[in-house]
Image (cartoon, rainbow, N blue to C red; front, top):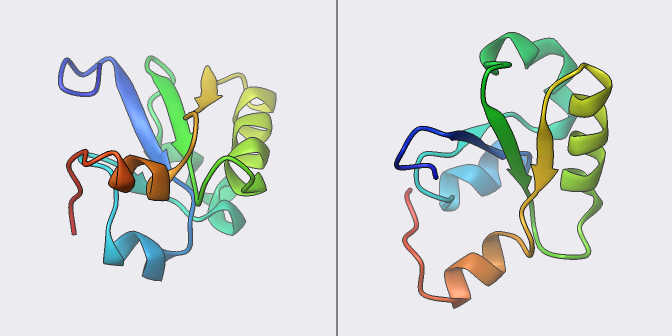
Length: 92
């Protein structure tokens, strides 16, 4: 869906973690900065947020905040560590 331009992948981890590796095409907006950077998100696209793993609350909080703003958002099952362990592509 990312390759087809149907979703925006949002990494809500701190910038340092994003720089060390992230999902291909993901944009980084740390959770603490989300409200001030909502203009970077296109309301016409579904947003898929992720963070450090299935028990990380950053993505849960991001999805709740995005939905409060009227955006369509959901959390990626798992997170960056699970993505990487599955052998899926990673960008740096």
